[in-house]
Length: 55
Image (cartoon, rainbow, N blue to C red; front, top):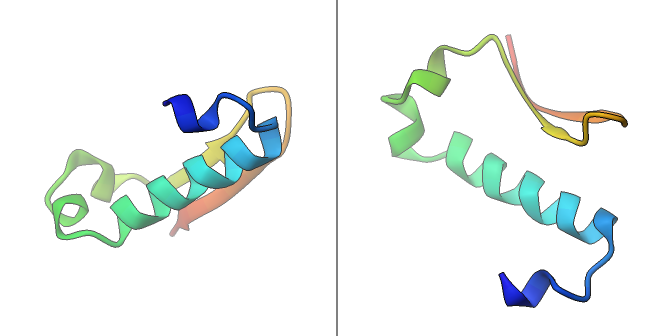
């Protein structure tokens, strides 16, 4: 992912969030094991998490 090389961590986190959000909205997600998850979050283990899906 060369286009992320000069980005700061906030830009990379926002990009990761957008990828996961797009997947959660996709048809592939509906039939995946992840569709059964109670929650899906994105973030770094030493910081705040962004909730993408929550029941």
